[in-house]
Length: 78
Image 1 (cartoon, helix red, strand yellow):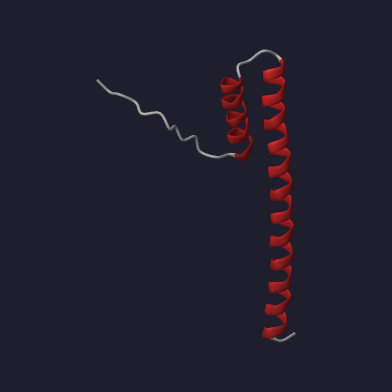
Image 2 (spheres, one colour):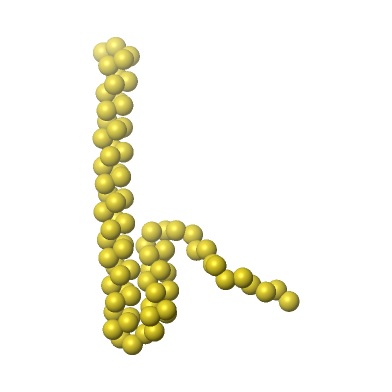
């Protein structure tokens, strides 16, 4: 097996693995969105104010996706 054939084989395997990884990540994101939406829906149905339910849903999404938490509130240090 020459060098070019090996490189082409490895490149093909890498492309396939990357494609499969991307598909899995997409499916995970969709499932995470469904769960976060369910948290919102159930919270509102249970009497939680919509603004709080939205925060709960966002926290769920962030936790499931493993995203860093970013606060938009300014903290006054006095």
